[in-house]
Image (cartoon, rainbow, N blue to C red; front, side, top):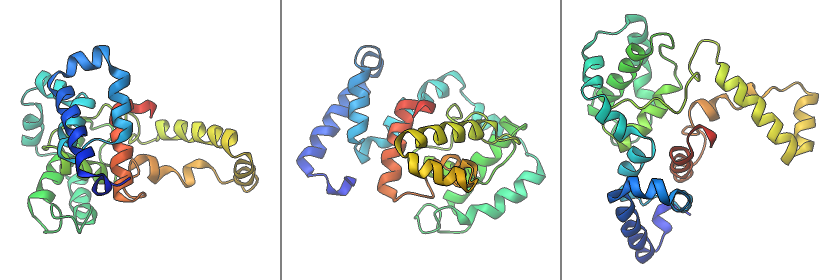
Length: 226
């Protein structure tokens, strides 16, 4: 169900429940984590999604533990070889969204800052085009801060993590759809050929927007396991 299809009275009830959780977050996570997960599965209210993602991701704690870290990274010039590529990719990210519609607007400026800061923070990974849509979705909901715990290894040169996830996906496919598994295996169509954009962009370029938000709700709730 899309957020706009939820009856107003149901949405208000969910907002009240989420406000109660967010205002007593540590207690809920320690004693009622299953209830938090269930409410994430129902969908986080749009008005509270930014705050909920920040709490679910651990970003709130990271910000408190690393005050000024993003500003420190932002002040560094960055590697020119990445800056040029990042600049060329900015206008491709959700070009019809109000944040990114204007070339050189505040949305594109913040997107550039986040992506550049990440290359400084993880120079061994540098920049990958799949990082841009993920950063753009985050910027729609959060300030320009770094939260990188969810996709370790996804953007390294060898793509080790995503290749491993591809093997897991193929094994799951064999379990739920043996016919499809046999067909793909027969024609030597490896998972890396069709699931790379799904996983590396966290479905942000693949699914309808309402579905993207619901997937991300659970992604932040479950972490890498999801």
